[in-house]
Amino acid sequence: RLPLLCRVYNERENIMSKSNNPLISLIVSVYNISKYLERCLNSIIEQSYKNIEILLVDDGSTDSSGHLCNLYQEKDNRIKVIHKTNNGLSSTRNAGLAVMQGDYVGFVDGDDFIDTYMYETLVKAMLDNEADIVQTGFRHIDKHGNLVDTITFKKASYTNLEDMLYAHFEEKNIHTGVWTKLYKSKLFENIRFIEGHVFEDFALLPSLLNECKRFIVIDGAFYNYVSNPESISRDKVNLNVIKSRLEVPLYVLKDIEKINKNFIEYAYKYICNSSIRGYYSLKRTKKIDKEAKKEYIKKIIIQYEKYFKIYKKDPSFKKQGLYGKIRLYFFPIIPYITYLIIEFKNLIRKFKKLIILKIPISINRKI
Image (cartoon, rainbow, N blue to C red; front, top):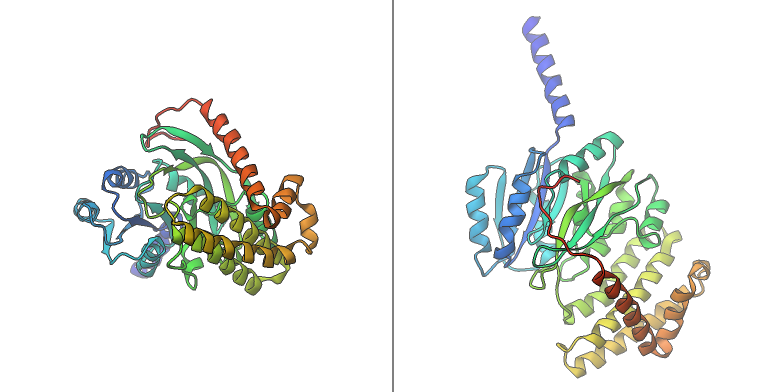
């Protein structure tokens, strides 16, 4: 009986150990970011939480990024490298999701970096609250390593879809970016990123929230988002960006129609706002030729008019503030007025940032 009791005890201890020290899969997207990659990987390797699987997905880099991934794989047996042909950020994340082994999963873009205590803090919040998703804040860092802005969110616990969608679309307390969060891996059993677009996080979020039983928002900012114009996740304005402004909101619409039509006004509002942003981006850029600009401005206006006509009949439209209503009403009549309003707001925002002292930060600082 003693050997049997010992075996039962050991199995119980293994189960308890796994539940208190679950494996986290971290999916790191890599594409031509050799000058940023070492800082990113060092910040992951030095995490205070050690039970991590690090999946480096190289999206066909043409610089030394792929070689650096291989070198780090030799240094740390927690690292696995996937080399694939270039197909964009969504494709790298999907490749990681296909092979991950963790109980939980997180995403890091290879030009960003994270604080030492990030995943220790997130997994503790996950276990303490029996949550499916935990979110932290983030810092916006310029290419020189200086702090530009710190974005934090109101501490919260959401347990139903209605509250979560409201927190995302209206309160902005649920952030779109997948890199601010830790997820239970099972949420991704039937969910993948749409490929061929930017703003892919927007298309994914409603489906994830529908699968989520408890969403926790915690204090602090542990992720460092770096302004890198060469990154696959920070594309400058080009035709793919404009196409995504038109098409990604339609994926959101389909998702919400499938999940619960009672929340469809969020999709209509998002389509309208995305159209305005697309127009704004087209007016500002000089990297798209005039004929293409004319073509896409026409498409944007047509799509906007179609969905604004539906949205303004919805009872939720009456809850819009004055600024929101002015933007939405003026856009199809005189789009340039809306453009000027946005430019004015951006100038005010930039002025506020100018008076903030920029200070260098350390990746090993505990919040």
